Length: 180
Image 1 (cartoon, one colour):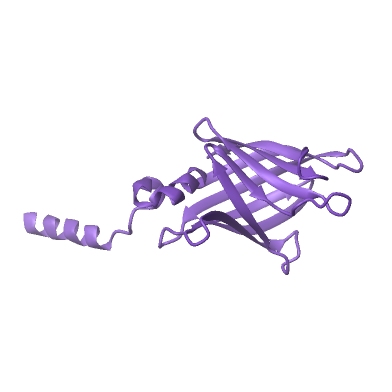
Image 2: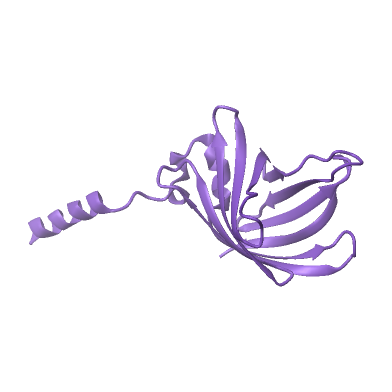
């Protein structure tokens, strides 16, 4: 009987899947550990404001983030509702050791054209992440960015901002997320 139990324990240890990095973030590089704060299931609620009309709307994000099997990519699925419009997407966040930058890649299956994925360089400074979208060209094109402020644990504040000059930023949407 002891031999059978011992054998069963050995089989379970050998066959058990590797622990997810969120359970053992120490296995991640120091750069990737910074992304681990986003792992898990999150729900965001917030408001939007149309800069042209001033009309206010609401948004809800449902986000589920897990580490890829090789623990190099944080993979997140989003199921969002923006002022009644559903947007589904897949996000991959990672650190690129060659250019020493964080990157955010987002692919859309609904709500946005599939031919235009969102690719953004990210800056991580302390508890603040900034995803940079288009760069503002004064008089020609507005710029955009998304700013996440993490903390206290299990909470995050997000703001989507637009700028005409790349210096002064106006909030177009903001809300708060809670880990589920």
